[in-house]
Image (cartoon, rainbow, N blue to C red; front, side, top):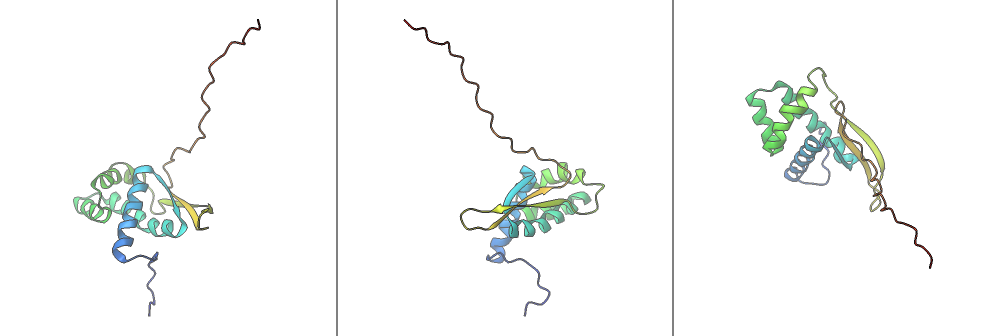
Length: 140
């Protein structure tokens, strides 16, 4: 029986799930915002918040633990230099999940996972390129 076993399995083996969540959190650290399915966002939120807690402690031991979990040294450095200091006065709740419309292909519920205090640049619509000025043609 699975009493008190609350891990979201996400239809993957434990190794695959851990690697996927580590990559998702590394993308969140690098880009400050990721769009994924709602179930993956909820699973990644737990990992991301634990990484920020390690980042706030900041010792060499905690750096090694974070690097071992994330599998990317560059993401761990960014976590300890930029993300964790931004949350030094916050006790918990470092991420937010914003629900989006369902995905077109399979109707899976999508969500945006982002940091609470850091504001990621909004995706602005591309401005049309200015048209070259043309002179009206003269009739002969």
